[in-house]
Length: 212
Image 1 (cartoon, rainbow, N blue to C red):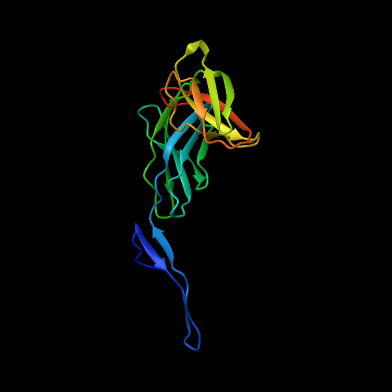
Image 2 (spheres, rainbow, N blue to C red):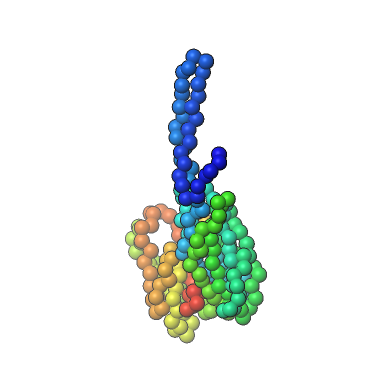
């Protein structure tokens, strides 16, 4: 097909004819010709001074696309450089090429054969690991609620992110996409299923949006 315009939805169908001039028409198939929607909610976790993990939300459900491009800037005055790509069914990336004592800024965008989406939000951090929470306690409140309480060493005031998984082999998922405010030491997880085993962990969040 020629003369295809970007940001346009085209509809296709197949019409079959036989020798007796009988006609059968297929269902219509819409095809949107555009770059994918931009991802959002980019966030990061500082696993160590040599490893940073990125997580984000995929906002493209209407068209197929190739994947996500991950870009990084070192320091405050550098340029963004693409450091990797992941397929469209992935919403995480591990950067194993960082060094201790550096400041890194990340952004991502999705792409397909038409082009690139707009960029996500930017997130920045240094690779200095911050204080971890301790003394996490978990108390069932009802068949659908669990209460979490935790502290920080030396009564530090840091924002907190909570992650949860089911079963020992499950995947950890952030259940507080927006970090809890500094000083908050309690959280009630609601809407849970009865007779289900849940696992929790909490991470501190520094002012630069890094987690530990």
